Length: 277
Image (cartoon, rainbow, N blue to C red; front, side, top):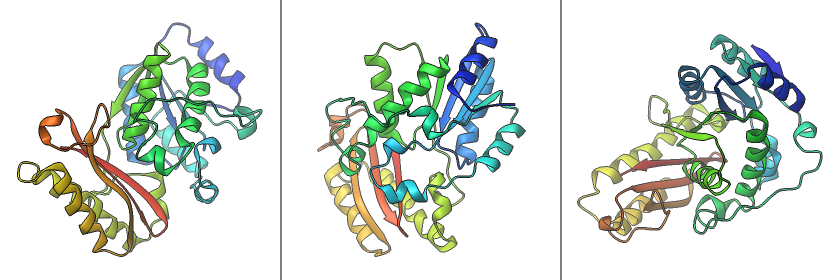
């Protein structure tokens, strides 16, 4: 496994592989089984797999969140080596950003609601780093998890608008044994917090089971009231939307692809999740 530290290292590695297909898995490290599943899929579908580990400062609207983000590069490299990844790009902030200018990308609704509303500037930072990484990797396929559903949708829209060659491969959310969506931030939860966090999955499951009995607005009200019964949670949003347009649903007939999305704080850790209904 080659460890690449500079953009020139990536360019050299890519040129060494000529016309071979390259699968790319961009991460911010603190790897878990969800990340590793993306790597496995990339390895199965491409000649070579490149993983990046970079905690991108431009996508954090909360400086404290950036400061507290878990960094476990040595452990991450051991995991990737065990999977026989071809190369891992581990750049410094200075390498990726001679300056910290962000570029903007606007898609109505997608960049105005939910995560975009709660984290101003977040997706501008995401697109800024994604452009840099995609230009470097020049990958055949890029593997992204569905847990960050809005981020995935925005990247897909950006790739389409820019007429880029990369194929975006959405991959299902991996969950811990009690249902909590795997996330690098989960390491900041206490053992008791992880048990409490399973409430998110339980509420999503109940909403799905009640789909044919209540309207989307009724289920949103019920779900929000359930969170309010547990003062350990600070709910930011719970909404039922169309998975393609992100428009809120008044009736199930309004969408063939309904999706429940949620964001909440627990023990100071922001958790997001979603479920197709």
